[in-house]
Length: 268
Image (cartoon, rainbow, N blue to C red; front, top):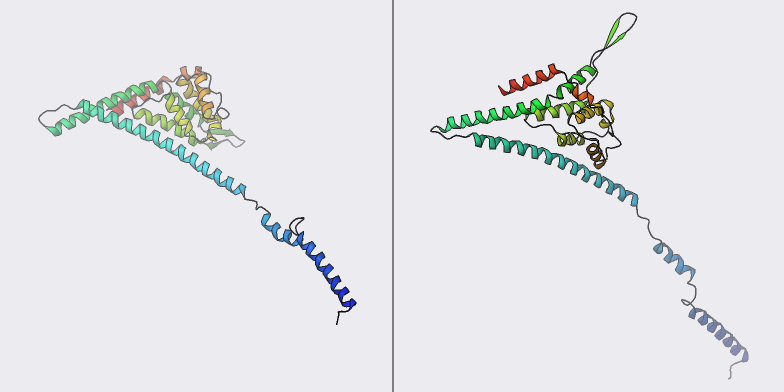
């Protein structure tokens, strides 16, 4: 029995619908992607923002640590060089003083005594050079540390001694130890001493006055001083000070004699 026309018409309509759907499916991937595909791909495509500021802070801390290690290493190297030089001079002096006789113990004893006399003589020579300005440094510090007395209605009130700053004490001790070791305190030693001070201490007026006086006493020119300050970034902190060289010539003879007598006692 042949199929009815209504059934054929229905099948034909369904075929058109299928062809239309196949045409739509064939366009997928050729045009704009589907919203579902975009929603699943968009979270993976978004780049994560790295925390660069934490890395920069860590790198800055590492750089600061390396800089501190380099400074400490340079200071240690300088100290070791000074000790090695002192040891070399001591051994060389003992070797030059050795005179071999029949008794080895007596020979070594005379060697040490002769070497010590030479060292004491070298110390006296250094003390005589430092005595031109070191007593004046002490006199200035002692005069500045004088007792402050304020007059009131009931009488005079003593407020006590002005404290010596740690940077000043360090500078004075360095000069003292170099002198007692028989090493003359010169321009290089002053520069090393300045580099060991805290940058904040270099801005203090009393420290600048002390460094300025020692600078003039060692006859360091303005050009040399400026070059040193610029090389180490200190021009804005210590800058130009202590240019009056008249203070160097005004030395107290009594204090110089006292320092020389101390050197004589050391030699004995």
